[in-house]
Amino acid sequence: MTLQFEYSDLLEPDQARQFGLILDRCFGSPSGKGVEYIDRVGYENFRVIEQAGQVAGGLAVLKMAQWFGGHCVPMAGIAGVGIAPEYRGSGAAIELLQATLQELYDRGIPISMLYPATQYLYRKVGYEQAGVFCKWEIQTSSIQIKERNLPIQPISLPSCDQGDQSFGEFDRIYRQQAKITNGHLDRHPSIWREAIEPSSKDSINYAYLFGDRSNPSGYLIFSQPRSGNSYNIQIRDLVLLNAESIKRFWSFMADHRSQASKVQWRHSIVDLLTLTLAEQPAIITESIRWMLRIVDVVKALELRGYPQGLETELHFEIADDLLPPNHGKFVLNVANGKGEIIKGGKGELKLHVRGLSPLYTGLFTPQQLQLTNHLEATENALLTATKLFAGAIPWTQDFF
Ligand SMILES: CC(C)(COP(=O)(O)OP(=O)(O)OC[C@H]1O[C@@H](n2cnc3c(N)ncnc32)[C@H](O)[C@@H]1OP(=O)(O)O)[C@@H](O)C(=O)NCCC(=O)NCCS
Image (tube, rainbow, N blue to C red; front, side, top):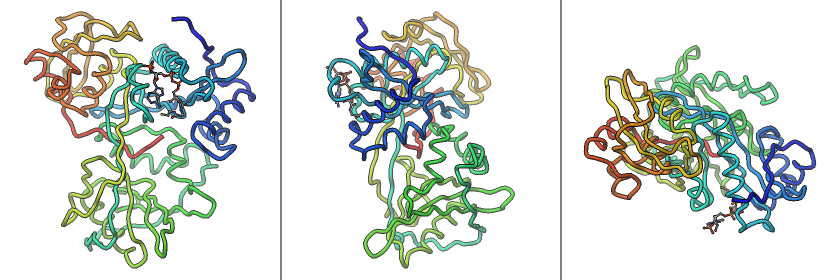
C-alpha cells in the first residue's frame, strides 16, 4: 500500500493547535475544547497524520493496563480519533490506526481498547467487541433499604494540582475491585481527574469512605446536578468491596429521597449492586460495548491470568494480515494460573485475531463465537477454551 500521510508525535505547538481545531470540528465541541483536551491528556500522548505539512487527523494513546484473570495487562486506550472532514473517505483513519497499532506492537504493548463511534472502521484493523459499559438509573424512592450499621464518612477530595499521586488512597481501594473484575482499567491520570474534578465551575463533587477509616471497604464520589425542581445523584466513581458496604450505599442513596429524584451510575450489564434490592426497579439507560485489539498475541496470552488448578494446553491458529508476527500457530500452556506460549502446534482452534478479543476477555463463550463464525475448533479445543476463559462479563465504569 502506498502511504498518503506522514505519521508522527505531536511535536510542534502549531500541530497541536491544528489538531485541536480538528477535534472541535469532529466532536462538535465549543471552540478551544480540543486544545484543552490535548493539554489535559498530555501532548506526548497524541499522534497525528500530516500531508504537505498540514495535520489531517490524529488520536490519543492513553497508556494504561487492564485486568484479566486477576493479572494486569498493559493496554493502550485509543481516544479522540478524528480526521478533518476534507480528508475523510480516502483511508486516512485506516492509515492512522495501522501506524498506531504498528507502533504499539513495536513498543511491546499487548492489547488496545477503545469506545467505537463506528465498529466498521475499527474492525477493519482488528478490533472486536470485548466488554461492556452501561449507565444505570433508579428512583431514590424505590430503593427501600434502611441498613445504616456500617460507618460512612465524608472525606475531602484532593485537588488535582497535587499531582498524580493525589488519588492514591482511592486507587488502593479501587485496585482491590479491579483485580477481581475482568475489564477494569489501571486508570490513566486523566480518568482519575475526570472522576475527582467537578465537571463545571458551579458543580461540586462529594466523597465518602465506607467502613473503617484505616481499611475502608469502599468509596463513593458523586455530584448533584439539578433536574427541574429537584436534583439527581450522579455517581462519578464507586467501589464497594463487600455486602455491608453495598447495603450502606443503597441506604445512603435512599436517604437523599426527599429532594433527589434519581441515582445514576455506571456498571456492568448485569449489575451485582442491584442483586441487593428487594425488587427490580433499576433500569439501564445507555449501553455500549467497548472493543479490544490483541496487538501482540504472545504477550497478551502470557500476561493475562488463568483459573488456578487448571493444567492444560490450547492449540491456536491465528490469522492477522496487519501484524504478521501474530499470524500462525501457537500453543498456550497453562499451569498455576499462568500461561506460556510456544510457536507451532496443531492449530485446533482457528480464528482471526479479531475473534480472539471476545474470547480473551470472556465477553462471549467459545461456543457462541463458533456459532457466529468467529472461530472454528475441535470439540476438545472448545472445552479447554471454555475452562480457560470463563468468567463474569468484562466491564468497566470508565469511558474515555
Ligand atoms: C470516523 C472517522 C475517523 C473516519 O475517518 P475516514 O478517514 O473518513 O475513514 P477511512 O476513509 O479511513 O474509512 C475506512 C473505512 O471505514 C468506513 N467508515 C468511515 N467512517 C465511517 C462511519 N462513520 N460509519 C461507518 N463506516 C465508516 C469507510 O467507508 C471505509 O470503509 P471502506 O474502505 O470499506 O469503504 C471520521 O469520519 C471522523 O473523524 N469522524 C468524526 C469523529 C469521530 O466520530 N471519530 C471516531 C470516534 S470513535
